[in-house]
Length: 354
Image (cartoon, rainbow, N blue to C red; front, side, top):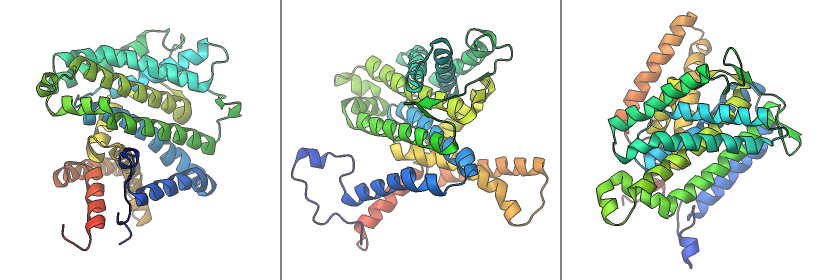
């Protein structure tokens, strides 16, 4: 009975087109942000920051970027891990070679480099689509892996291919503690989520969705497929590149090319599919599913007092995880975001059937 729109009248186009037109949604989002920014830093333990919250925020950002490309524009990509690697190594080189470069500028340069690489490998989307496009983007993964291992300039002449960063600062304030890293990632995630939400609600988002639904009909009504597809690759790669830089700078601190291998690309694609294609909220749901579920599966036997060999526990976790993904995709192929949307509709209509 609390989730109703009675008495909420729209008296202007601006009020009717706002991101959260229902008052209850605005209140819920404001409370959620207040809880995330104010309460969590005071009560969460260090383990929760390092193992759950910070990876969740960064992977949510990467899934958000991939969802723009796959969910809104319909262009399948299996090279997301490569774009994350480009963002991480480009930001590292920018900070290592430019004295006194601010952290945000380094992240932006990493995103810009990922944008260039994404547009280059997205060019085949003008001619091919579907499985063939997935294979073309998969080439980016192998090329970037090779470049990070063979080109010494990428790793600043590191013999092992491993690089590290330290002494992160933002406006003169150190970003070293788990709480400061969490707040920094959270602020960037909120910023990019707002930007992405407004992009998909605008004319460029409508062009992406028209290309996704039927590219031939979209071209007939005047939408330029070249501009729509390449702009989706550019925006997606920029966000993914920033997420890759955050993954290396904030979460890992020291990394090598294996940190952005093909498994990372598949994990991000699973996040988008499970969370919900073409849904900003689905990116968060998918990232939570991928990050939290393996931790729960690892700790449930211990909580029940079961003594299981470490190798067996790892195999059981992978098996159960795969079975749950398949089961969930069969029961709700539109993702967790669809379940969330259905629940909201039922709350708005209850107790009436329609």
